[in-house]
Image (cartoon, rainbow, N blue to C red; front, top):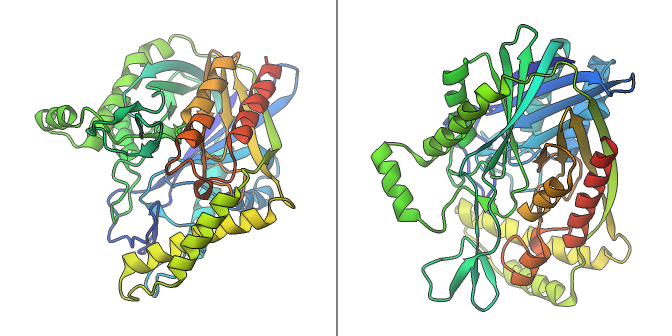
Length: 464
């Protein structure tokens, strides 16, 4: 097996519109750098063939499929020996990274980097990182381990009448509990140089990187503190690749135990981000000695790229009429042009409702949408990607049925188009309603979510 790593600085050099809220936020400063980390792997499929995989993790809310395709075009010219179809990117889902797609927010005016300008910067720097990772491939080994860290929490509060609310209040007399499960497992992949020294860590957790999601600065969120912590423990030459597992209904924000957690932060003298990093770094330190015992320098590497047509969630007549009413109300409003929050929020809400209406009008002619999924086997572990904010239950279904010892589910991995980054809720969530589970929030419904589970498990099973 041959492995190469590289890391690129993808921090914008001018103010940008930050992605992740229903209104524009112009970055006022850089709190900490944004990074893109590339891991290139080449090995045997166990049947005499050479297989490839290139993974890139980015401090972004998501990486649109169109950006991945641009990158593949560039890399096809620069790396003729790389099968660029075996490349995929994932976002950590920081809400303090730049907007990379035009049309998400109104034009921010002079002095602010446009999404197109940032996309050019992003593609150039990530392409260079992939080239460096690929060209630095050297004999290496891998090992894997499973740890624990309490980071993600279910963010949908359920009530006695059966409905749920994203970030709903839990001190109400009708609070019934949280809608779903929380997964505090940490899937870890370690890479080792030929001399046995640690070269990189892939850390996969079921939580988006959005602790400071509403801030007006550029930041990789808690993964920045995680990197600092791991570099302090293992050396700054060790690459750190964060991956977000299925976590569309998860968040680092607390709905219960808030006062107790705040008191513990005060006693420790830590911020919430630093506390999250302490837990993740601690989980790595806990299993590191065990991972170092079993290093495989010739594991089976198999990688299949699936193109899957998913049924789009149908918009009902009632949902169409609700969106139409919202559009009429919004079109009648005239927000103050000098109020950035009001004008951008108005723009976003109008766009969201118009898209629902367009889907309703086109759904009998265009009822399927193709996405790209990557399924990999690396020794005893598996990796399965999807381009959505994929609710946790789907990831658990894949993990429970997989033949691998550990299965890394990677959400927000590019490979779609208009569906990139949208929520993919469960049947239970749709029945309970609320943000994240309504037609305006997603284009693919539970039927498509289960199709991803079944196709991923089928592809992974064939690799064993």
